[in-house]
Image (cartoon, rainbow, N blue to C red; front, top):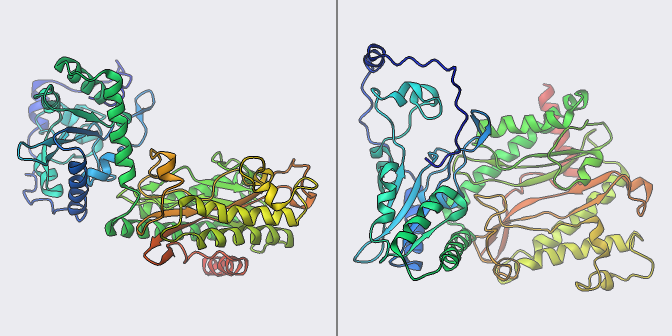
Length: 502
């Protein structure tokens, strides 16, 4: 058991007589004997494990899914497995909490993958009817060992035998674990290491774990064809979610907390079309758009304001989109809003132009931020006498960053900020390669209380974000179907709202 411990209520009355247990275990139709079909992702996951096997020969590799986290008292947060587990097992939203994937070294070389988990309990067990956290009566059936083996093409065992595998020839076999995935599993690995009395110090063992986690994070930086297909699905679903928002904007204006209404519309669509949202949605109207990660979404939505929506659908495979559009609530941008929006759009176009094989990841930000700095310089917002080259000086400049403090891009995939464990030289200075998927998302933020900008700018925040695939000869904007230019966005709003009114 690695899930958080829940509070136990003494007043719960679960029947437990022998007569009741015999009765509740009887009279059920037999379970289906039809094998679960092999998952499409199974072959791709096998290839990923083969790469890991080559990198860590002869080592026992432990990749936990993680456990349930208590939200309050006896209720849990929705379970989401650790990304490394999902990536190497092929399981997504249907992963079982407390599962552990073990890659066990074989004497002849390579590894055998075995999934340890809590399988379906028999109907004559107390868990079947009495366990409100895991029991079939309460949360539905879990897969059997045979189900997992058929679906994934790997071995599967009950989680109760996991500790025995850790202890097996631990002195002769090096252990590595993804520590951040599950602290209790990491502690079990440390205990096995201590009992084996290995020559490596605790700090050396933990450094080896960090190296393992970093490698698994970096593996995901180039997507295979299956992953790219999942990203296309996530982006298409996100497109639909934005159209639901547009259709609901008039109602959002009428609500006292319209931002929550917008958030809810997208969340409803995300739960219907996928597993849910890939991250906390930002529905930032008016000056709230100038808070970069505004997820409270407690404000009103007013005619005449812009609303910045940063949201993404996570599909069942756990791949997520991450898209931002800044929409005029009334359907038309004002002259000032258009001016700022088009500056951000020009910066995004410059950033996208830098997305091509051979360029560095950091080139995307350099291209976009130069346009931002140039516009701010043209508008006279930089301190007197500061030139464009001076503000772009990385050591002594940066005045323009007051109005765009964040970066322009990040990798995207199973995590909204994917591959985050990579070292700076491998991430920021890394070379762009075909198969990478990343965001391009410049912005300009003029807070309502910013006295260094014209009054007409104050309270306006704009960000535009798209999801981009690096191709052999450049890039593909995977979210290109979602309008971006001023005229296209205005026409989009009119079309969607006209259709909604019919």
